[in-house]
Length: 134
Image (cartoon, rainbow, N blue to C red; front, top):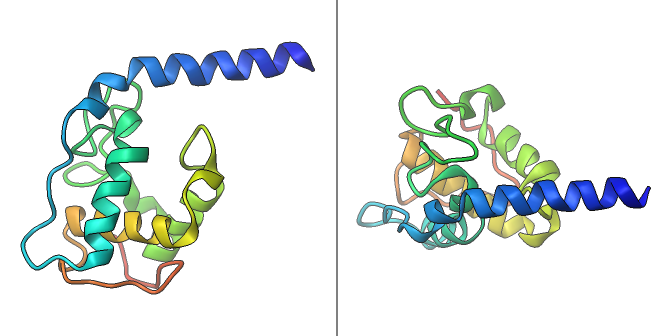
């Protein structure tokens, strides 16, 4: 059991080191008129997500597949609520409890603005809603 714990810790450490350069870059600011929720989502994405997913949601060292924009992965979650539920279970990778529900909702709102699904002035209910992801 101890060996497994050390191995898992090593995997997380390698992932953090490999993608730290991406986190040093700034996340693009939301468009003018963005809601406080979307602004908060941009800050939280910078702090907790850009490390592995890249500041622009693509081309990161560890997870190079785009998470929004052309060729993105987030459509598989179907809706803002589906994306929120995924974040609840698995993100941030090193500790999903690190970001609370309001913060994860803000990250979802920011990602959906970046993906063009909602306008920047959006304010989603905690936990997301049925806003579709295309």
